[in-house]
Image (cartoon, rainbow, N blue to C red; front, side, top):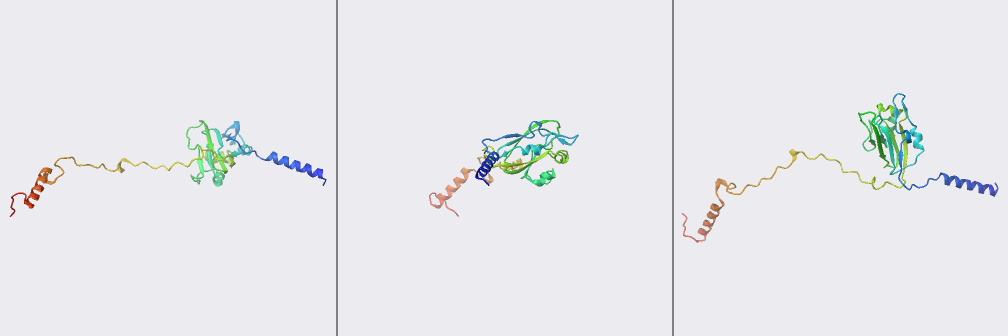
Length: 217
């Protein structure tokens, strides 16, 4: 192979590498799921308004980015890190540690919603709607993304979880109030006053020491 050909191939390889290399992110990004189509499902035709897997493949996701779901209460938004939960299109066997329900159990239909979802875990993240007993997910209202490290989590998302909620104690569990006896003669047996007892003690001491002429028989 001639030297000129080798040089040309080397230049082409360098250009391809430079073109395919991703520039490091300089800011966090909000990704509107499905772009202008939003996150919707037609229950009459069992079709989605967009191909969400194709949309996800066209994006680059990093820690600290947000997914913006423009949707309605006819759909749900489930985020999970559990591949089995994603494949089953159901949260029945999911764990609180790996699955988050952002819009479930809503009984008011056709209510417009905007649901922001932060990306806080690096690696595979799965999203789907479990509405209509999972039919929406089975027919395409679902997608998978890979979250890169990027700039890392911003301070607003890089906080320890709040302490576990504890039920406040009820009124029955409160300690009974401490009652201090009121002053006066009520605190002494048989109603003897402080003055009477003090006088008797003093009288006995004087008698023992010979201070008064009292003779005991």
